[in-house]
Every structure is written in structure tokens, then in C-alpha cells.
Image (cartoon, rainbow, N blue to C red; front, side, top):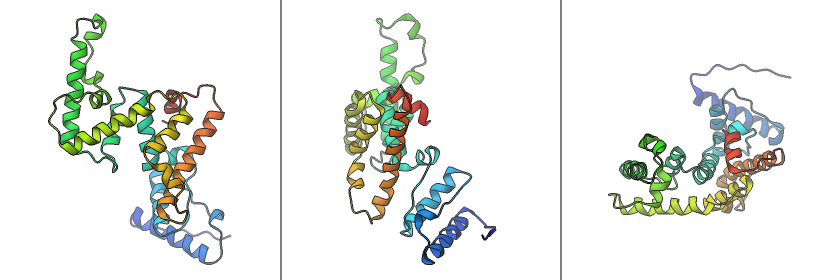
Length: 238
């Protein structure tokens, strides 16, 4: 065998060198599935994966830690988490600022204020148990609840439309109990299922292979556990 050692100024230069080496191997007749890239961090592997696809070199990610950090899978996980846990405001925020919805900062801030307002209403309600009234309204605020009850907050027309769309997306998954079914439902809601059946030579379809790989991981997890709930899956994937 042959061992090559390289020293690069930055990660971008290292990624470019790896892509170049793989291109040379492929041009020499090597098969793509006979080539493996190992990395110390998921972030580096994701950059290499993106660069390979950009150069029209077929590539697939392997492993829960790496696949779960891809933008496509992060969006899927965020959607099912938001549906399963009303207090998962971080997941809702990730969905709102994603390229699909691209909510502006002012609209997001207005939604956050509305969530605190709703929490204060609940905590100050005389019917609320005494032991709950002392809870911090900020900690108990829910962006998901605010999406379903926007009230008269001042937001842009486009922002209101996007918020209502996300509220409908979350609601469509909320009553799905099985993690496998929830993930597949999220894939359809996010229109990623269309990409899975698109032209297999396109770059966008190569990226959707990540989604297919993630679905395989979900099924494998489901086969190995007795608790197949969404909550159990979220705890496992994180």
C-alpha cells in the first residue's frame, strides 16, 4: 500500500485535496463504493460530503452522529420533536429560520413575545394549580402554542403565512405515535419524498440519499427497541 501525509493551511484546503485524490482514484478505475473517508469530526465529514457532491462524485454518509447533523435530517428531527413536545421551542425556531420558511428576525421575536404572553395567561389563571403558578413564564413558553394562537401580534403578511404553514405541519404529525411513521410523515410534509424519486443523477437527489440513509437508521433502531415512540427516538438520536 501507499501512505501519503499532507499538511494544509485550513479545512477548505484539506477538503479540496481529499476530493482531488478521490477524483484521481476514480479516473484510475477505482469504484466509488471501494473508497472510504474517515474523519475525526462530523463537521469535517459533512464538508467533504458536500464537496464531493458539488464535483458530481457519488458519496454517502454512514453513521448516526454524522447523518443526524445534515441539514435535511436536522429539519426532519426538528419537525417531529416540535410535534411531540410543546416546549421544544428550539426545534420550532430551527424550522422557522430554515431555508424553507426563512422567517425574519422581527417576526421571530414577535412570536417569542407572544409565547411568553400565552404562558403568563396560563400561569395567572385562577384555575391553574397553585404549585404551577410560581413557574417561570419564559421557561414554560411555547413557540408551538404561539403558532396556533398568533393573536394580534404585529408580523409581516409573509411571516404570518409561514407561521400558519408550520403550525399545520406540526399538527399533521402530532398524533402519530410511531417514530418510523412520524419520520416518514415529516419527510412527506417537507416534500423530501419527491426528491427521493427524482432523477437519480441529479445533485439534489444525491443529497436526498442522506434522507434515505436516515430512514434506514430509523428502521434499524425501531427493530432493536421495544419503545418505538417518538419521544424514545428523540432521546436516542440526541
